[in-house]
Image 1 (cartoon, rainbow, N blue to C red):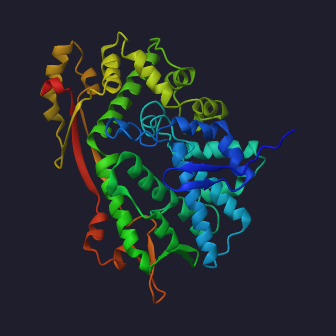
Image 2: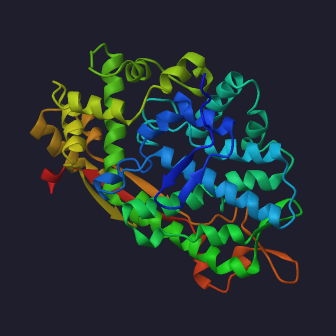
Length: 409
């Protein structure tokens, strides 16, 4: 019987060759739970704005693994002791950090499951994989949950300057063509070290950190919170909400079995058992797209109209403003639309609604990005930077929006 060579390489358009460090990592990548990430888009519906943004969570997870390998090498070179077990735990935790994402990323979290965050589902997947792999993920789970005593290890996975952010900014910038998001992850990693168990950046790397934070701010406004991407995701959430509402009333909707399960049942983190997880693992973007293609021909005016909007990219009009929108401002639009389409005022909420978006490139409340100065003191990057605009990046910027059908213009 021939042995499979598990020390594979992936050819990545951003980093070149990504190596799989050991057989366990290979087996995790080969697992159906992980392979599903090939069918989950990294940037949700952003391809409706940036046609190249068709890359997947699979791409991103491998990129994060690659950056983590670089970080481990750099820290060891600088004298930071990382045992082989800790090294593997870092690789597993970063590889699986996004495994709990549902179809089109965040749309499902806010519609057909009851506020179940993708990180909570990632942890459920990790625990299930740990059973299948005879406890080999135990240390990785400890690190992922922030329960391991070495604080810098969690910072590498989840902080304001982690491998996740370094990869998604660089990758999303590359595939979308939004050049402003491109960050120098190589240099950022080279500038890393550990002092008193905290991840710090050497002072000479401060300009790379400033560029990283500025890139993050610009990517949010230009890509992740682009008004067309935003309205498309909001419409998708409305579609799933309407589909669930109809299903619970006994209306038969054509869709895949896993999607039907989540529409027929109230799913919370408390009810997310092994059977639910298995069904969630069968859900991907194709379930949603397949359903939308069927639903655009449905008798229900709301479901068919909204589904057509996504399939044909003929979306609602969205207007952004710095001023809060009063609910009364929407009333005339709702009344007119209700009469024109013979629907109730309550049902117009699917087409005419308001909300807000927030962008904060750096939070002073969260774990800071620490700068190691030449005199060996450590400072928050906000204090160390001579860039006045870096202080403004820590301010929370809120924008308000209203969405309504174009024919009401």
